[in-house]
Length: 169
Image 1: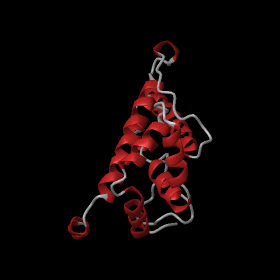
Image 2 (image 1 turned 180 degrees about the vertical axis):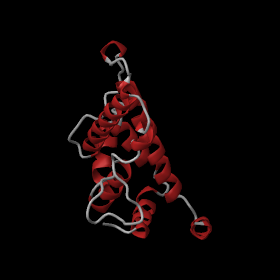
Image 3 (image 1 turned 90 degrees about the horizontal axis):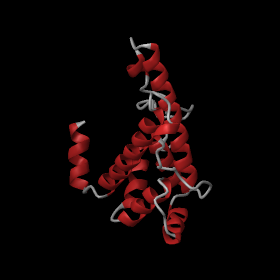
């Protein structure tokens, strides 16, 4: 398990002034007609420890080596949405989360060249009455964009900004 300092260094080394890679990752994961150059860029950059960091941020999994200060896991968080909820709402939340995890797994496989990425087409007629497909689709788009923007912000943060942020924690 990589320590937070090592993760930050990897993010900075990989993504600093590298919007082309971030855009390529987005296009590959969301299957937004990525070019062969974008696929090649992703394949050449997202490997080894970089891949570990990217995957950990996008789809965290609790393991024996996970950081004790940050118990992140792909299923954490849904409990807040189901406490005192109706059966219908609990079903919606669990089905939506399961679909969201599946879509994220497909997006990560795309970074490895093992999947075409996520199909963003939405078929209202094929969705269930709780709209779990639409909810999962939209959440994945937001999650990918916000994570890539976090990488960009961390990578382009100056040492002074990092020091001020560390002191404020």
